[in-house]
Length: 196
Image 1 (spheres, rainbow, N blue to C red):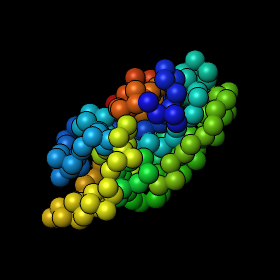
Image 2 (cartoon, rainbow, N blue to C red; image 1 turned 90 degrees about the vertical axis):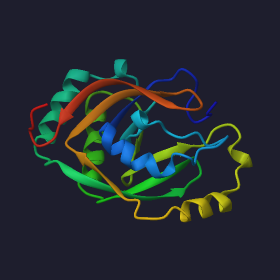
Image 3 (cartoon, rainbow, N blue to C red; image 1 turned 60 degrees about the vertical axis):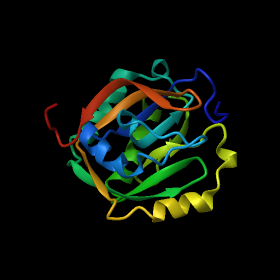
Image 4 (cartoon, rainbow, N blue to C red; image 1 turned 180 degrees about the horizontal axis):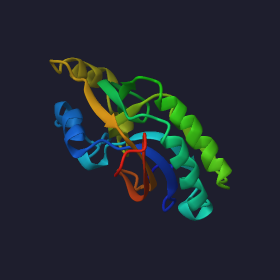
């Protein structure tokens, strides 16, 4: 079990969620990559976190005020495309880095302030850059040999970039069972005033 995420705790997160087709395209090159200690993220679990409100559940925030604040801001942000490239092996995940930095970073900054204005008491963990993980470390990860993993990633031929069309922000209540991340949807806020 993850010591970073205590058992049973649910935290609010703001995500950009890819469509099933976008997720499928992003994970397809790595379908055979997961192994003990490095379980793959299922297609329906792919997500790009904007903000993790550590130790803040939905009951700890003025949800109506929060959604009004975020909705007003989101109407001023036009939908945009995020591009994700070949993954890198990090301390806790095999991660696809994305670009561009903005408006992603501006949205993450706004959401951090909005959560505070809505009365939430939490530790802010905003994403410093767009990224999505295709696998997370779990029990047994200490036995993984990272040089070999990096060689396997380098041996995957072809361009591996994929795109995600960001046209809405997803507020979810999220938890970790020590192997997989799961969430329950709370609200969806469209960008640029689009109808959803």
